[in-house]
Image: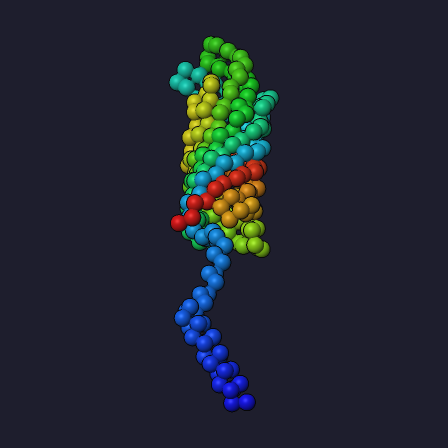
Length: 230
C-alpha cells in the first residue's frame, strides 16, 4: 500500500511539473467590436422630385407704370409650364444626433411661361400687344436642421434658414430676393453612413407686385446622402 501511495504521489508531481513547464494557457482573443457610426460628421447629398414655382399666381394680377410721356398697363394671363422636376445638391455637418447645419442649391428645371397683354397710352397714341416671358428659378439656402429620433434608423426633422432665390426672365427684368426657406421630412439610415430621406421644402419669395415679385416655390423630393464620420 505504501508503494502504491508513493508511486501515485510521484505521478501527480510529474504531471504538475509538465503543466507548469508549458506555461499557463493563453486566453482566447475577444471578437472585434462591430463598427458603429458616429453621431457627428460631414455629409454630401442629392435630392430630386416634383417642384412647383407658383408663377400661375400672375394670372390674377394687373399692374401699371407711369412714364413722363404716358402710362403703361400690364395684364398677365395664361401661365403654363408652372410645375416640373426640381433637383437639389447639398452639404452639411451633423453636430450631434439632434442638430445639423447644411447649405444647398435648388434648380427648377421647368421654365414657367407667362403671356402678357400690355397697353401703352399717352395723349395722342394708344399701342397694345402681347408678349410671352419665360422664367428660370433657382435658389441657395443655409439651413438649421432639428432632428427628432423616433426609432433605430428612423428620424423626423424640420429645417429653417435664410435663402437667396433667383428668377431669370427672358423678357422682363430678373428678380433676386433674400427670403426664408423652411420644410420638414424623414430620414431612414440604410447603413450607418448611407441615409435616404423624403422631404418638403418651401422657398419664400416676394409678394409685392412690382419688378421684385417672386412667388413661393415648393419642392417635394426624395434624397440620398453619405455621412463621413469624424
